[in-house]
Length: 65
Image (cartoon, rainbow, N blue to C red):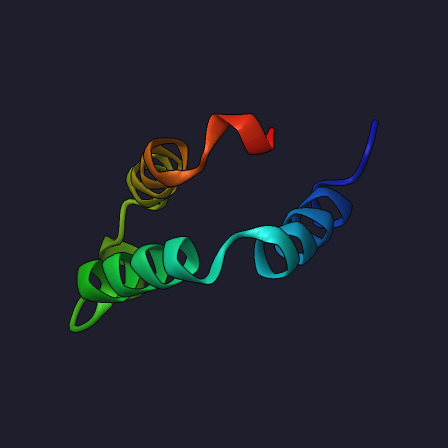
């Protein structure tokens, strides 16, 4: 089994290296908006991940995959 930390680090690399800047900015702004002023333990991490995946799926050009 691949350690979760290894998967997370690989995903982070691809997120920052290959995601178009416009999509990255949209995701970052949306995440910051949802997290600022909220205590970390009150943040629904699963909800944030699903929201970000939805944005990326909607924005990325399928022909690039």
